[in-house]
Length: 386
Ligand code: SF4
Image (cartoon, rainbow, N blue to C red; front, side, top):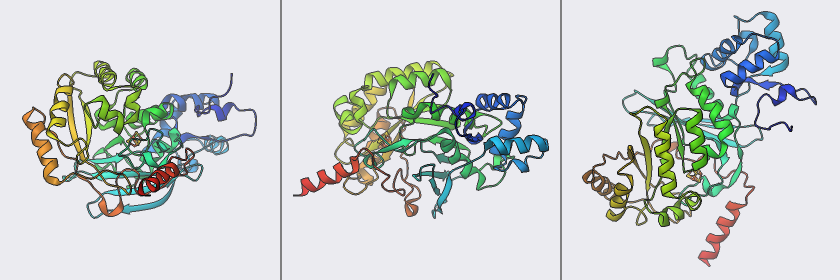
C-alpha cells in the first residue's frame, strides 16, 4: 500500500529519512495514535494538545507536567511548527489580519473580525493556496490554484491568532470565539485536511468552540457535503449568489457539475443529520445589474422557501479587471427590502478592515499560478481592450 500524503502519521512509519511529526495539526485520534506509536499512554494526547492549543506552546521543554524523559523523546521525534507571520496589521475598526508563510514559501491570509458589540471575534480561515474553482466575481479564483493546505497549516491560522492574545484558559477572553472556513480556497476540495482541523476547533483539549461557532462555507461540492455530514457537525454556509442555474453557472462554474437542485437537496440531507434548530446560511454577493434586481430577489425567495435558512447579503467588493461593479447602497437596501417583503430578514454584511485590505484574497496578491489562470485572465483582458 502506498503511503497517503495526507496522513500526518506517515512520517512516523516511513523507513527513509527520519522526519519529525508536526503535532500541531493532529486531531485527538491522530494524537492518541501518535503516543501509542512511541510507547506512551493515550492520555498524553490531551495533555500535549492543551499545551499546544490552550497555551500556544511550541517548546516541549516547557511542558512541565511531562517527564523529562518524555520531553526529550518528543523533541527527537516530533515538533510543533506553525506558519510564519509575514505581516500582521490592525485596521481602524479593530479587524486584524495576518499574512502567513506556509511550507513551500506560499502565503495565505487569515482575518479576525470583532463584532461591533465585542461579543464575538470571528476568524476567517483559508483552506487552500489560491483556488481551483474560478468563481467569476472572486479575486482568489483569479489567482489560480497552487495547493491544498495541510491540517497543521489550517489550524495553524487559529493557533497564530489565538497565541497573539496569550494563553487561552478563560473562554470569555479568548482571542477567537468563532471560525468561518471562508478565506482563500474551497474547503470541501481539501476535505482530508479540513476535517481534522475542524475537529481541533471543536475539541475541548484544543479550541473547544461549539458546533454553532464553526462554519464551513462551500460553493457546492455536493458529494463531499454528504460526507461531511457523516463525519463532523458544524454550521453550514452556501455560496449561492444566484437563484437560476443559468446565472449561477456563470458566476460559480462548479454549478455546471452540481446544479442548484442537487445542492439544495444536499443541504436538506445535511440538516437532517443536525439538531432541528439548525439553519443554513445562504451567501448572496450582490453585483450591480447582474443579480441585484427585483426579479432576482423574487427568484431567490421562491427557491429557498422550503429550506430552513438565513440569507446574508454581501455587496460585491471590486478588484482590478473583475468586469463587475458594486451596486449602490440604495440598490442594496432595495434588494434587502424586497426580500423582507417576501419573508426574509437578510442582513447586509458590512465590509470590514478596508484600510488593511481585509477582503478575501486581496492582501496576499497573486500566488504562484501553476494553472496559468492569472496569465490567461490578463491576456483576455488585453485582447478585449484591443
Ligand atoms: S468564491 Fe470561494 S470557491 Fe469560488 S473561486 Fe473564490 S475562493 Fe474559490
